[in-house]
Amino acid sequence: MHDAFGVIAHAALTVFTGTMTPTPEETVDPVLVTPGPAGFVVIALLSLAVVALVWDMMRRIRRGRVRADINEELDAQERADAEAAAQPPTEEPEGDTPSRA
Image 1 (cartoon, rainbow, N blue to C red):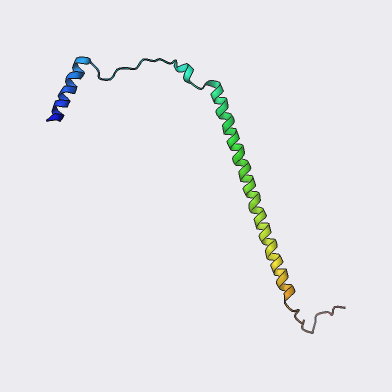
Image 2: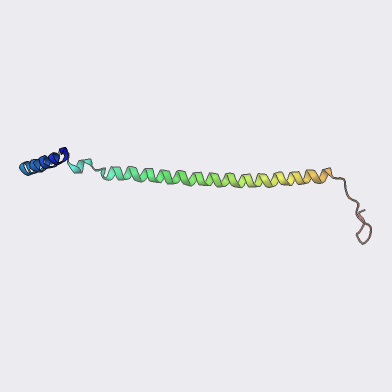
C-alpha cells in the first residue's frame, strides 16, 4: 500500500513541478578545465619515459639471461674437465695408432 502511495505522490509531484531534479548551472568555463597543450606535452613526455624505461629493462633482462647461460656452460665445462682429470688415464690399444714420442 505504501508503494502505491509513493508512486502516486511521485507522479503528482512530477506533474505539478515539471521536473524532480534541478538542472545544474555551469559555474566553470569548460575551456579552462581542459588540459590543453601543456597537458598533452606532459603526457607525451611521461609516455616516452615509460617506453625508454621498459626498453632498458628488457635489454638488461636479456643481458642477464645470456650471462647466466654462459656461466652455466662454463661451469659444465669445468665440471667435465675436473671429472676427466680425476679419472685415471686409459691405456691405448696397441696396433695401427702411431706412437707418441
